[in-house]
Length: 426
Ligand code: HOZ
Image 1: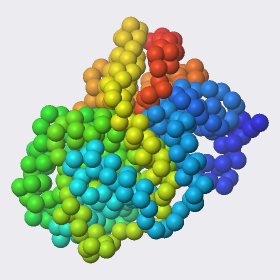
Image 2: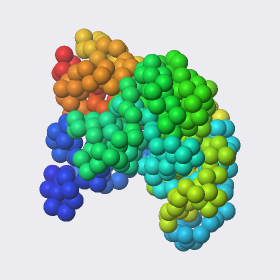
Image 3: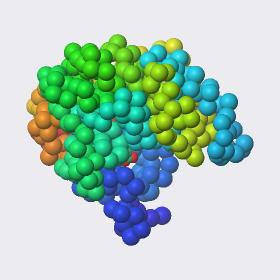
């Protein structure tokens, strides 16, 4: 049996930084990444057979818990009929119909293979449909790693303190206007100056890539109003929040209707999938109907679609989100109470099965607020919890995720571990 450290050393020889996605490398918290050997329900086991309560859940998709038997069976049943066809299937129609039924803002939807593909395609579509070039995004929002979106982005870029990627020519991002999240006046000013050139506003309607930051009342409504007034497309990036915060995403919670929505993560139940969809008149611009090109060999992959359909079916069971939300609140309230007990400045927030924990007295409203939290203390907390077999995201700029398998005993065990870690930090 290899240790995590041996695997990391070996990985670093063949894979840049030893990982296939930067945040996994533990660089912002220090220490050795855990190499996952297997996972079940709310747990995973590392290469040393140590068990962890998992609060990442593949960064969102494992909403039913890892290796849910019905989802695994759906994958196995689909796999025996072939892994990929590059031709249409009835199951693709089924998942499209499910998505349209659950997200009323979506009149049509196209499947892709990742969240990055979904947002990249939605931006191209918005530009093609409006004939305009400029896009508006918000600091700390991460929309995948397409060139025009890698400006002042969140997630791994923020984790490593360099929110704009090297390798992106200035010309590529010269059409990207970056504004502060939750700053309605800045959006108004941008439209006053550039209104006729703005193709779209893309936003995480509840940000999850600078830790969890919710929209303040009126922010999303202002985006809707200004996009409508100026003929720009409003894109909600619900890759993270879609079917995670509630049955109809943030749009269902806030009642603000976007023109286009991007999805991924939960809708594939752990298999690689993404989707973008929205108003039929806008979607009509995509090839083969219109001039905006978008394609993919693995788009609508039958195994991923089977996992997605089964997951969405199970999420549709009555009371699913009420229970998930209650368990998530039990976690955040329990952590907050224990931190306060030990005199530690701490706050937490959640929506559905997504949460944020912050070493700050008040819940952040912006990227600046998150950056002002006690990140050193977070790092110590992260490692203390890891020692106790609890795996939170290895970055103060990432949200956390609870699954339907995080029952009372799992949450209680987490709070008991946190109590002892908070005590050591006080
Ligand atoms: N971008 C993801 C977090 N927001 C990380 C993905 C990964 O490392 O798997």
